[in-house]
Length: 441
Image (cartoon, rainbow, N blue to C red):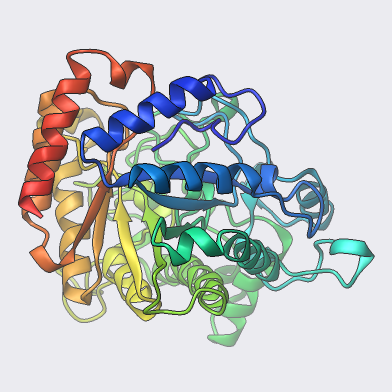
């Protein structure tokens, strides 16, 4: 991954240093680089796009034989783990969303400015170029991608720009912003909060309850699901035999997860209308590695971010009829749109995480994702969740990829290029890692 500020006016890595790093990457036989194409930078005014810096970078990468993975970053940068700069949403989009109540909102009423709520997908509220008819969020995302594809037509045709990773939520991931670190609201390993309190999401839940013939109270989110930094046993809803197991709890969690999958489906369908399948440009979607509380029954941190996993609705709670597997659902979604399943936290060892204090199981979670992708027949890609420069992390990534079927290994994107990576012994270890990954296919 290139530095987050690569497309900004004054990046921390000077142009000469960036070019030297690109030359070094090409010499190390790395396949290419990933670049955040920020909505807030590249569409400063409605319908006015500027991809000139992306075009220049792609041209240089083409000269060096490096591919470019372009992330359509429809989210804010700043405040989360690893964010070294601040890049807000376009001011015109943020203002319109705030005015219409179309930002993800928690139970306290705080509206998160990281990204638009999925309830904005089909509401015509975003301004158009020249004061035209308002656009829906999905239409705005698709128009941005179309403008990008048109501007980068040459590098795409030449096989330089090879992938579009479609941002579908905070940090570019398909999830809810349930654990916002900005402002100190959340800290690891808090369970996070359900963020479905904007007016349209609340109306959607109420309508779903009414349509299903359920009592009126089912049309409101649970009131005992805790706050951002609670543990599962503090929040009654997430205790072992808490509300999440009840018919009402299952109804709510299913609605919450369904809304997220539908959001991914709708945006990917719109992008697919611009980027046809079986072309030279692959689509990818990033899924977050929410590894804390994985070994608890309720899997609360996964649930609040929309990755709902439910056991069979029976006395033993064993997987079977009626079970819900979030990762299988996501893999099926990606299969429908011929998109790569990109998963994080491949570098993590379970025994190095606070298993007892936070019930972390990153290795088991990676296996869940790999197996779901394999079962759905989709390509699998990976990333490290945190910056690591050591041999132990590289070996763990290699171990994770051994489980991925050979024909489905799409690649690994390393986080992140910078001065630390270029130092010794980090650079030599990275080059050896690239060589080993290349050899293993």
